[in-house]
Amino acid sequence: MKQGYQMVISNAIRASLKRQAIKPPVMIHYSFYEPDKRRDLDNIAAVAHKFIQDALVKCRVIENDGWQHIVGFSDEFHVDKHNPRIEVTLIEAGGGGEE
Image (cartoon, rainbow, N blue to C red; front, side, top):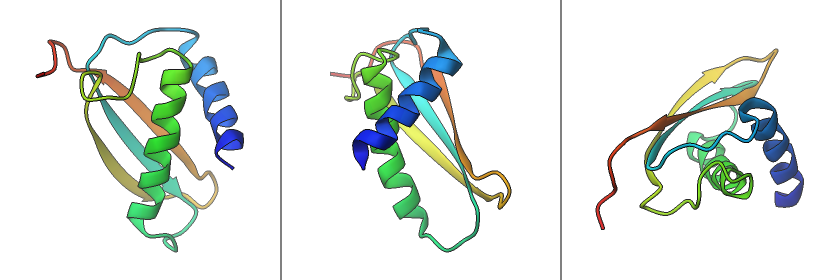
């Protein structure tokens, strides 16, 4: 399952960013658009964070998904029964992370 999602996510990253590298550290904002309110919010976000962050590393958008490269993330949730999706915004946080 993870490999299939990883391929879909990687293709979306490549189409959107076209090999653009982001300067670390970054803040990641996730906007989740679900078809309905059946799934718990933590179940939606937990898997998505892992798969998307792993794909960002695989596509070399960020070097790794550790503390020095990702300073945090935020989530918001919406219902869109006609166009469920996840929108991801990477925000360059500037400066260096604490060691």
